[in-house]
Each structure stands twice: as structure tokens, then as C-alpha cells.
Length: 316
Ligand SMILES: NC(=O)c1ccc[n+]([C@@H]2O[C@H](COP(=O)([O-])OP(=O)(O)OC[C@H]3O[C@@H](n4cnc5c(N)ncnc54)[C@H](O)[C@@H]3O)[C@@H](O)[C@H]2O)c1
Image 1 (cartoon, protein in one colour):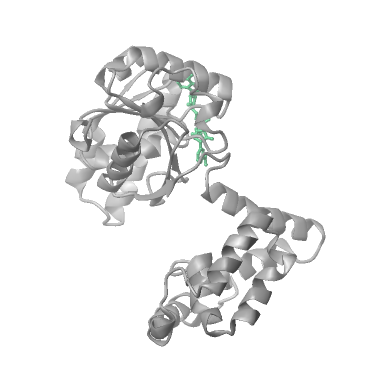
Image 2 (cartoon, rainbow, N blue to C red):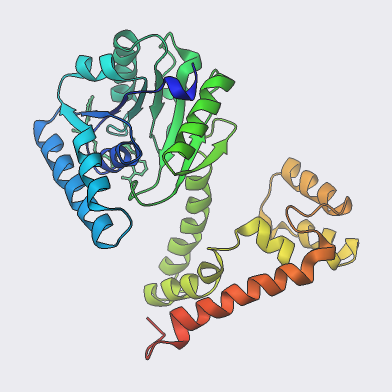
């Protein structure tokens, strides 16, 4: 199958995630059908889609015409057979329970055309937990959206043990086609990639708050005004590159990664130390560091003005 062979799209589960996922596809031209076991959930989804489209138009993200066309492309049904018959790409967004997902995947496997790709929006399970009985092992994949799914750009595209390269590539390209930012997750892990990263931070946030180290207000303010301030431009790896450590003597760099505060596995620590020894930054050539820092600082100064210095009360 090729990307162009995807003509119709199905979403199963019309809850908090399903309606937003539907908007992504319908807005960029795909006829779409949403199915749910609950008629009320479908009605709510239609109302949510209407509400979201109104906001997109009010904020001048799209035109009236685009919003109308998006809504017209979306149909709803409680009949899964109807959805399966019309879908070349199905996204499952039902309750996060492995037995329920397993039952649904088995049904879809029987009902959908042979070529149809079936994706799951699971946030904590892996394909092996619920898709191991389907005959189309090569055509199951994870697409993990972030709430609100019609707004947040990033989507994890996760590979299962038997997902084919073709399915993985088509799904990646499909996410690009509907203007999302696809992130390849190459190995099956519970919580994929980004929920794990988020969870690592959440663990410290709630632990330190419970210990009384800071108030909730100060923790929030601290996150937003420090690394949150930088994050639209740099994640953890870019931050390391720009921090200047690549100009440090090797022994100082190695010492940084030898401290056990990073709590890395022995294997991971070895891989990173090797990188330090080999002088291999992730993104920024040390010879271009000054230019990159200047570019970064200019963006930050503009953000400082917009978010802080232009406000009477910047501590909110
Ligand atoms: N809410 C989030 O922030 C978030 C973020 C990322 C991923 N997810 C994942 O997305 C999935 C859906 O989450 P949600 O928050 O939208 O849940 P939700 O409870 O809001 O919606 C689930 C919908 O699925 C329907 N449903 C349940 N069983 C069904 C079945 N067998 N067939 C058809 N429809 C069925 C329910 O009626 C409900 O409308 C879960 O796997 C969740 O882990 C959620």
C-alpha cells in the first residue's frame, strides 16, 4: 500500500481524544467516520468538533469554508461494520483497557479490508498487550496524540515488534500530511517515549511538593520561568550542546556523566561517556557555538519582553 491509497479514515472511540483526532484528518481532506458504542458520545463529539472549528475560525487559523468542509467530511455511526468497510486507516481511541482493545482489534481485523492499517492511541500499553491475535501483525502501529489532539502538534508513531517498515513509513507520512509533527518511536515501550519523559519530571514534581520543598505555586512558576521558558527552542539534548560542555576538557565532561545523579543504567552511561570521549555533540558543531548561542539569545530576549517585561505583574 502507498500513502495515496488511503482515501477513507475511521476513528473508533468518540471521547476526549477521538473528536480531536478526527478533526486532524477531516481538516486536511480525509472523508472520515467516527464510531462509538454510545450514541451520546457521538453527539458530544459532533458538538466538540463544531466548538473547536468555531475557535479555529475566530482565531484566524482557518477560514469559514475550511471549517464547513471539515465538518461535512465527518460522519458518525454506532455500527463498526460501516466504519470498517470505508476505512483504509483506522485509529482506535477507546477506553484504556487491554481486554477491550483486544476485542476491538480482533473485530476490526475481521471486518476491515486486507490492506487497512489499524493504529492505537494507547497512552500506557504496547501493541503486544492487545494486538497479538490479529492476522495483520504487519499493519498495526501506535499513533499517540497529546491532548488537545486537534491542537498539540506532536504525535508519537510507535513501532510494534512486527509492524512492517511500510506501515511505519506510511503512518509517518500520513501524520505529516495532516500537518502533525510525527516522532518516530523505534522500540516498544510502555508509555512510548514522551509520556515516560513527562512522567520522570512528574515524579520529582509531586515527590518534592509532598515533601514540602516548595508550594504548588512556586513549582509551577519555576518550571514555566526556567526550562519551560527555553523549551520552545531547546529540549534536553540541544540544551546540553548549547551549554558549552563540548568546549570543556574531556575529563571534566566525563566527570559530569560519571556522577550517579543521572541515575542511568550502566549500559546507557557507557554509551554516553563514549560519546563524550569521541567529541560528538548531538546537534551543534562546537565551531559554530557562538553563532548558535547568539541566535538563541535573540529569540529569548524577544520572549522575555513578550512574556515578562511587557507585563505589570510578571509573577503569574
Ligand atoms: N485523555 C488523554 O489525555 C489521552 C492522551 C493520550 C492518549 N489517550 C488514550 O486515548 C484513548 C482514549 O482516551 P479518552 O481520554 O479519549 O477516553 P474517553 O473515556 O474520553 O473516551 C473513550 C470513548 O470510547 C468509547 N468506547 C469504549 N469502548 C468502546 C468500544 N469497544 N468500541 C467503541 N467505542 C468504545 C466510549 O464510549 C468513549 O466515548 C485511551 O487509550 C487513552 O489512554 C488519552
